[in-house]
Length: 121
Image (tube, rainbow, N blue to C red; front, side):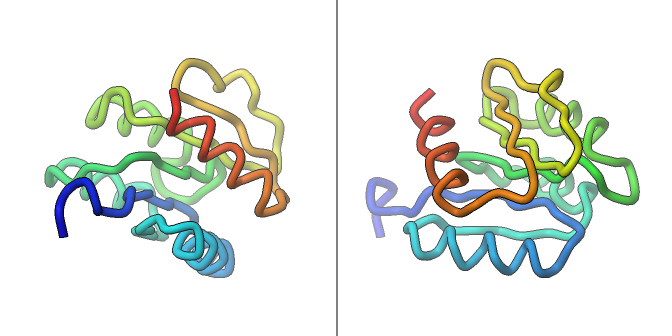
């Protein structure tokens, strides 16, 4: 498989197994390669090891270092990588260039539209 044929890789960071499963399945249907982890530290470790992703889907409400601290560490380790911030609590204050907020619960079409927007920017 050439780089041109490779599926865009998306890092999914969410502590809820059902959410990770749903996102992984949806991303596969849309021809993305999903890498799903339960803790922000796991995602950060993957970035620290040199893994690259077209986009990150980050839950903001998690145990451990938490979403906001994870956001800043992800941006430090992988500058310019678009990030979708997911939460059931409004956090539009964290949206900005390369970042979009996705309110939980969301439908899959909203997620797909958001991914398309993030990957175009």
